[in-house]
Image 1 (tube, rainbow, N blue to C red):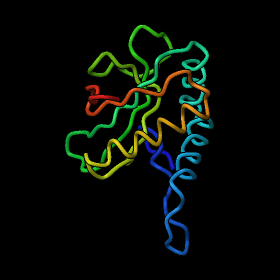
Image 2 (cartoon, rainbow, N blue to C red):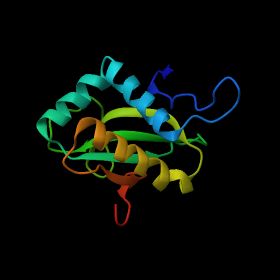
Image 3 (cartoon, rainbow, N blue to C red):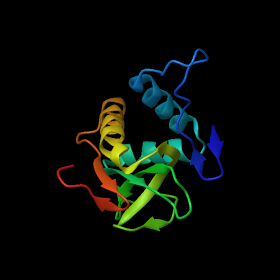
Length: 137
């Protein structure tokens, strides 16, 4: 499930139509990131360098779904993608991550917890919406 700009969120429905457990969905997403030729090494370098991780939930002009970017704050030389608003450097871009702005906190909070546990991050990733920090993230 990869597009020209990155993977899409893993399919969340089983063949029978029942939703997967959210934890499984995020575990599958992490597997996709790790197996990606660019995203996997970028994440590994960021983690090894102790770079602060940011999850930026955002839309693109003309699109109705929300994406999430896994980023570092500028100053950590691990990113391969263009600089983003808010001093972020994108490591991973996941398309079609959410449908509405209201899904930002629940989806990114769970992804944050999964990334922190999987990569043994010392701090939970900070949450951003459209390039700006969310209050109390």
